[in-house]
Image 1 (cartoon, rainbow, N blue to C red):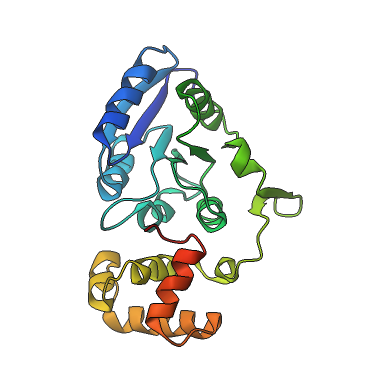
Image 2: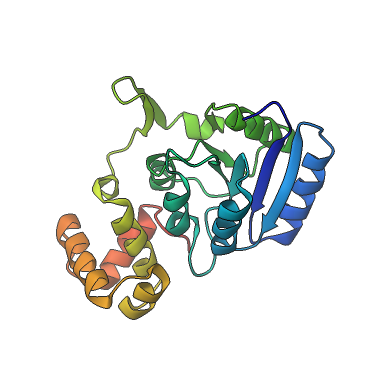
Length: 219
C-alpha cells in the first residue's frame, strides 16, 4: 500500500449495508471507496478493473458466491487484499477463506469502527479477525500461516470440491453447477462421486444434510 488513501471495494448483496459502510469510510480521510457491488461476480470484475487495495466481500450470494470467485483474486501478484465481512461463522467457512488467501474474516456483529480499523490493518499487510474467529485458529510456524483448529472431514476436501459440495447442498443440479462454475457436467459429476467416496456417504440427500450440519452451506 502506498502512503495515499486506502482504496476500498465493498461487495454485499444488502444495499443498505454497502451504502451505510461506504458513507462511514468516506468520512475517514484514510480511505477512498472506489467501488461497490451487490453480487460476487460483479465484485470480482470490479477487483480486476479497479485494483483496490482491499476488497471486502460478504460470504453468501445467490448464484455464484464469494468462495466461487475469490480464489482467482488472491494470487501473489495481485495488488488487492481480500477480506470477508459476514454474519456467518463456521470452521469450514473460516478455513476456506484462509486457504484461498483472505487476509481477514470479520463478523457483522462487530462495531463499524472495529471493521474500519480492520480494513486499514489488512491494507497494511496484517491479518484481521473477530475474536470469535481468532479463537478457532492456530498459527503454523512452518507455513507462516493460520489454520483452523478443526477435525471436520470437510477440511480434507479441495477448494473446488468444497465449492461443488456447497452447490449440491443447495439442491442445484449437476447441469446447473457446471454452468455456474464453467465446468463440464462430466467433471462436476466426477467430483461429486469423489466427494461422496471420501466422506463415506452414498446418498445425495444425506450428503446435503451433512454439508448443512457441518456449516458448509446456509439454510
